[in-house]
Image 1 (cartoon, each protein chain N blue to C red):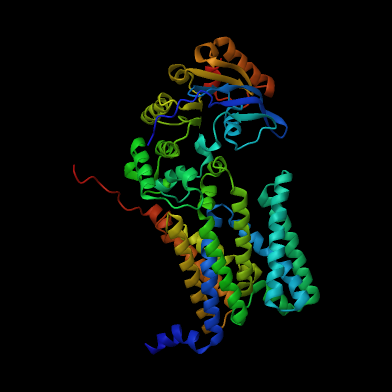
Image 2: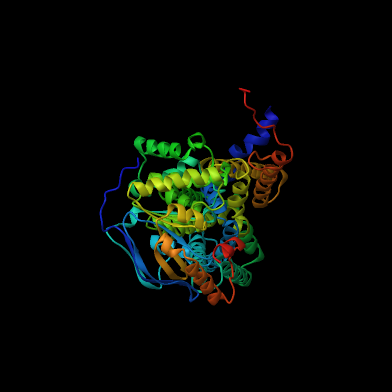
Length: 294
Length: 259
């Protein structure tokens, strides 16, 4: 019994950095779970990935300006992330390039610029921190930032929920109802970038999107309405973070990749066992219901 | 829930030289005319004739490059649009009653709350189209025919004065077509204006008093018997040839019907 306690409970209590990391992951999961589900439903899964890389040069510029300062790096990431999203949107509307292609163009340039800046002006350790994050170094200001972003995300989603859902399901209908679709889309993009900035601190630019997409993709195999999907994705994100942190603590592995790998396992498990379109369901179907009356 | 619409004489949709193009290639070319209040019109023509685009221009989903769509004595909220099935995400995780409830948008808006009587309106609409047993199901569980019933239920909830239906009976089984056609005929009897893009000329001749035959530009518009003449249909086919050098997208069935 005490062994289990030492394995699962003690690390959070005995070590302040583990406790803070857990709280940060909880806040991150709250925002990223729902945002990830909506990205999947809007067929924008790869967009989240691209956006997360686009944040890098902003964070690098912030790093140049003020070193490892949470606020300058987050602000830089936010500004550049939004700029890339808006530029990609504009280019796809005025040229024949589709939005995903123009976004790919911008985020690759953006990623290259970011790596260039940090390699030139920082150390390799700095580069590793930016790429892979430092969740175990989360301090009180970053906790505040991450939880503020989670609150803003959930409140904003609650306000724009109906038009957002309608825009995914039947965009033509929303337009005949007087539109507002583009505004909702832009607000949603801002939320995506905000959550990536939050995740960036903990998991780095390379893996911030992991806590968004893996739980969302896994949840899609378990539920069939948006509410349950968001709750399941949030739960998977949080449980993966918890397990990942414990593994990284006990086995002395880097925390970011551990968290993402646990989320990846949840995803693989869902592909096999998911009730809503998983492999087991497909190849070992349950017998269907029969009429009782006959 | 469907109340007889007031019989106002000047509540039609007037098209003033409407032209819509994609990449400068006109899809709808200089269309003039009026869908008068209470009329029931079928829009027919070869594939790629701009029928759907014309409907979209009327409900404001696409903007005309030239000319205007004038709503006479109508507000946008009084138009009800039925999209083609392919334009809706049928795998989206939303329940049948929530999808039908979207029809309340004009009264409830993007942020308002639904009241109990709104719920009753949705339930009644589901009963009318025969989906009452599916209320709590996800739309992914519906067949094509059931999904079209769902979209009709949403229109019933919307309670519009003018109905613009894009291929309402495409790919439907006989029973569903029969039921939904019955609803459309009811709407006409209640004095609503019905405008439908259709492919089956037999259906048009049997049920639609007016007809607009178009191949990018209007070829004939008026009483169905006067529009669907062999000469006009030949002309429609000829125009489709002129634009493409060949009938680009016409399905074999359509080509023979229009020959």
